[in-house]
Image (tube, rainbow, N blue to C red; front, side, top):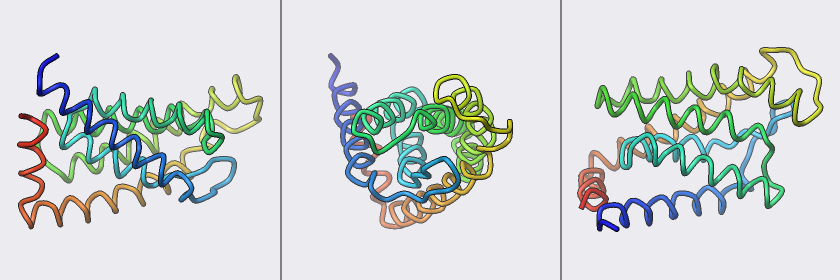
Length: 169
């Protein structure tokens, strides 16, 4: 395995661990549990690792949170779609503001809409089509604001560039 991939795998593992350690911090909104830390990590993974690593991190964190009983099946569509959208946006634009907006739109709108079939088919919940959009928007907006503050601090102190060099090998 290439050294670059090992570094990205290690960073991914640390991001998953961060999500799991902080999974007790959530905001209950309706039937969903809003995890702002997941969305903060989605943005950081997009900027440091890329879209596919971000999706993998979101999937692993959602799976482990479900196995631990701290998450629901709704974690999958929200976190994974948001990670993919902001990762692709970062890859093709290289700009932070569109990346933040892609996380919010991907998780809040697309992930919120995809949560409807998950809730009705797999969780046996009755819900309206747009029932999860607002809770997902609340969660992702909070996490994206956290990410924006953290990225701004990391960029100002040149730590963001150092992290990129470390991960890229």
